[in-house]
Every structure is written in structure tokens, then in C-alpha cells.
Image 1 (cartoon, rainbow, N blue to C red):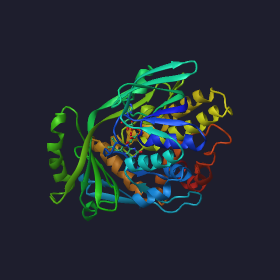
Image 2: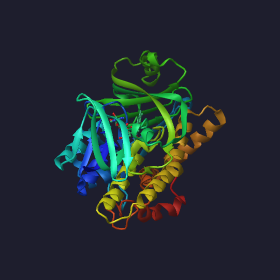
Image 3: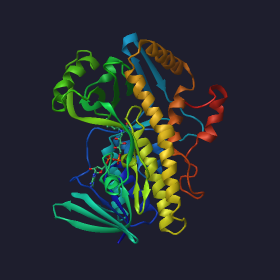
Image 4: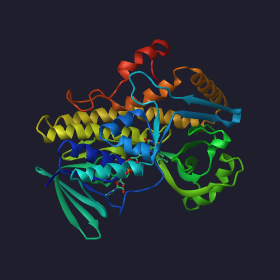
Length: 414
Ligand SMILES: Cc1cc2nc3c(=O)[nH]c(=O)nc-3n(C[C@H](O)[C@H](O)[C@H](O)COP(=O)(O)OP(=O)(O)OC[C@H]3O[C@@H](n4cnc5c(N)ncnc54)[C@H](O)[C@@H]3O)c2cc1C
């Protein structure tokens, strides 16, 4: 019998499994797909995530695979306006860049490290049933070898926004789903020649987009929104039409992959029920404007690995798992969801008066000498309270140490 079964070999599942294994827990990961999923999703990692990657021993490898970006562009084509925010070294913050890399690379590198520590990773194992009893959980999977059963003391559902674990445990997913659809495309095209930075917001009521470079070989991500009443099966035909606008008529692009997504602002009513725990998108899912989904999801996984490891070692009472649930839900509803909702609003705002106000705010931010620091420090808010005094993460959030010199001029971090 294992200490923990993690369902889902996505980035949160694999990082959480690795963090648990590093504390000595015996872990199995069950994944329904035959390999790590490589759909176009998270690509940008803020310093708050780099802390995790470094502490788990993955950052050097991922810096080799991805690249470091220090600029962020905001474009408002209607007013022919573009601004650039550059991140600079800040005393007390160990990183002055954002890492760009595919989330499948993060999951893969984490998996390789986890396997070396004895974590068992089983692909082609779709979880279809669970039974929670006094001694732990029994999981049923379906796959090439038919139905199989696994037992563990604890179960972590890191199986994405549509989480089967969450549904099987009877945990509601509170919040709402947006009417729009996102289309994420990976494309070979040099956006810099059109004045884009390596990461960009394009604010436009019709053609809003988030555009970012993905690797050093010239692969980029262009994600835009479309009305979900448009036929889903024809979304690929519409990509060229939308590219016409983003690439300003250039035709020398090569689409590598694409995927439509629903957008949510939802969190599970609890992240702890019996022996079942939730992390990542299974626990809380946000629209991706501003890249806060995985940014917050990995911290939910790290806080969970920290407290669950302590429970397994007998250092903490199980009641700490309820504190974990309350704390992570609070971070989502108080910090993550409002910020991502505001980003989405600004990107697609239709009201002309509000668009003028947004433009003024974007200009003011770009002229503020602390704008780079704001960009870097905001993401630290997703760390929230570290729940144990001797946690490996107890010094993770530099904000209390760093903020005063900025706060003297700004009052607070937005
Ligand atoms: C277009 C787009 C861009 C984004 N960009 C960013 C960004 O730049 N930064 C950021 O922080 N976030 C971003 N996000 C959000 C980010 O992709 C998610 O937060 C992230 O994927 C969550 O990771 P996860 O491991 O929790 O879940 P997932 O990545 O969804 O992984 C879940 C895994 O569970 C497996 N699984 C599901 N059901 C079962 C089952 N029954 N049995 C076994 N296995 C199962 C799945 O196959 C999958 O491998 C973006 C999202 C989108 C859509």
C-alpha cells in the first residue's frame, strides 16, 4: 500500500509527486493518457514558480530547455499605442526574469526526477472509481490491462479542471464558466518583426490576444478568444482569418498545433474530503489571462505536499488539511480569480469610455519606474500563508521584505 496516489501526470501532479517523494513518501502517479499531454497551455513562469523549480532541483534543466524573458508588451491597436515593461533585478528577489517553457517540459522533467526517487508513474491508467474507507482509498483504473485496483492512505486529484476524482468524491466545483471560447495556437512566426515583445497583451474588443514566444527556435503562442456559439468543429478554419489581423497580412507562418478551451472561474467547495485531496486545476481553475492558473496551482500542490508530508511523518494533525483547503480557496477567490477576471475584462473591453480609462492606466503603469517590480512581485501573492513554522517554504515569499521600498511610493502592490 502506497502513502499517496496522485491522479494526473500534468505539471501539478508531477511536481507534487516529486515534492512528496523528496520528503520520503511512497507515491504512485496514475495517468489516463499514454504519455505526458502536450497540448498548447501554460508557457510563462513567474519568479514565484521559479522558487519551486529551484527548490525541487529542476530550474537549471528548465532554463536550458526554455529561455528567460525580461520584457512584457501591452498593445492597444485602436489607439496605435504600445508600451513595454522591463523587469530589472530587485534586491531580495532571486530572479529578474520569467521563464518561458512548455508545461509538458515542466511535467516531464519533474517526472524524470520523481522516478529516480522511486515514484511509480503508470500511463494508460484512467481512474474510473474510488472508494474511501477508514484506512485509506481504493482506486479502480481502466486501461490496456483491463480494470485494476490500487490502494493508498491518501489520494490527490491533480486531474485537471474536469477532475474525475473531484466528481467521484462528490465535491462541487463552485463558480462560473465564461460564454467565450479560447483558441490557443502554437505557430512558427517571428512576431518581433511586427513590434511584439516576447510576452504581450493585445487589448481589443474583437481581436484580444495573448502572444508569447515559446522557445529559442521561433515557436510562438497566439491565444485569442471567440464566441462559443461559433461551430466548434470549424475553429481551425477560422485561425487563418484571425492570423490575418495579428500578423498584419503576413502569410509566412506555420501552424504547429492548436486547441480550443472553455474558460472558468471555479474552485472546489473543499480541497479535503476524507482521504481525498485536490490540487491544480482540479482544485481551482481560472481563465488564463495573466498566466495565473498554473502559477497558483503549483503552489496549491507545494503547500499540500508540505502539510501532507508532515501528516504522514506524524508531525501534524490531520486538521491541518482543512487549513490547507481554506487557505488555498481563499487565495483563489481573493487574489487569483479577481486578477484574472480584471485582465480578461481589460483585454476585451468594449465600452469606449472604459477603454480610454484602461489606456490611461496602461500608460501610467508603463511610466512608473516600479512597474517591472510590480509585475515580478504580484505573483508572490499566490503563495499565501505557509502553514507550518518549519516548512521548506517558510522563507519563500520575499514580498514582506521587498515591498517597503516600493510601497513608499506606491502605497501597495496591485
Ligand atoms: C491557452 C492556455 C494558456 C495557459 N497559459 C498559462 C500560463 O502561461 N501560465 C499559467 O500559470 N497557467 C496557464 N494556463 C493554465 C494551465 O495550463 C493550467 O493551470 C494547468 O494545466 C493545470 O495543471 P494540472 O496539472 O493541474 O492539470 P492538467 O495540466 O490539466 O493535467 C491533468 C492531467 O490529468 C490527467 N487525467 C484527467 N483525468 C484523468 C483520469 N480520470 N485518470 C487519470 N488521469 C487523468 C490528464 O490526462 C492530464 O494529464 C493556461 C491555460 C490555457 C488553456
